[in-house]
Length: 192
Image (cartoon, rainbow, N blue to C red):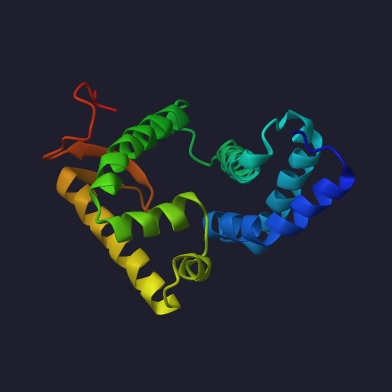
């Protein structure tokens, strides 16, 4: 079933606007930038609504557009002229490879979490729910939801730190990693 009327698009806007703004704001941490990205997301939804063939996949489709818009924002920010000309041109390829490898390693770590912690991470970090929304969905208190998310993040952090040694730049961004006792990193990781 296709969605094509302006009423359907308006309903999508009112249904998802708040969730999408929260989802974006958690990642860009600037209200004005988040608002700009939200507008971009709903413009893309409006322009591409005909491509949605399965109405049952609407939510994941909307969140994928939001993720892509966030990535576009950061990609554009990276292409701004840098003061230091000594930075290699292939820095974004290096970043992509680092994050791709770490992301591959996270999946088994997330799968290894106890069920209620895995669920907390998946709902908040991947589905984009706020901790309040997660609490409502699971029927638990807000403090219980916050505790689960915090513990799950703590467990993942420690699993990552047991697995690999990370190097950070002065802004706290990962610039490289080295396997320590790492079953999750690719065996053929070359010096990046």
